[in-house]
Length: 179
Image 1 (cartoon, rainbow, N blue to C red):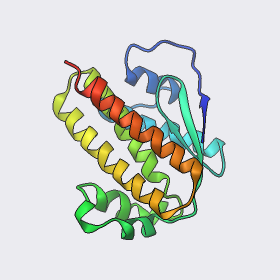
Image 2: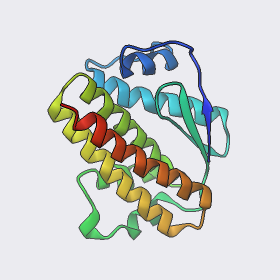
Image 3: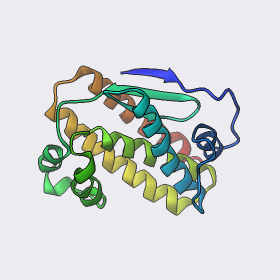
Image 4: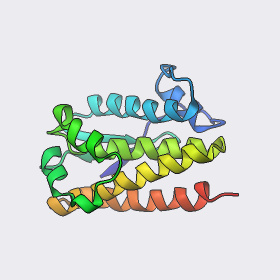
């Protein structure tokens, strides 16, 4: 795992402006949380296309993390998740999306960071219900990321997972629970 600067050299008033600067003004949703979530996917795709063999994840503030692809499939991961741990978004992201992402299980990390960035924007604009839902999805994806770790032997991915665990905790403690 390595992090790298994805600079615009600007200061942003909020996370939506950050995403829009990197996504070259291509945001077109009616709400800020969706803009940040979907814009994160777009930036990740741009970075992934420029870094063959890696998953790339934009974590805001001009920073991205690059992780080499892992040897697993999304279908194998989906089967490994116990029924009792399959949440509301399991079917959509681990079953239905396997049609397009089966050979790229790091796709779940793309969803994790998109939900996390969306959570941060929902907290920023004080949209409590959106923040609650987005954080719930962030944590569900984090659980699937932990299962992926148990299926592979990859120290670089494990480093990224530790970062993801800490980052999720930090956002929940310092942005979500902010008064």
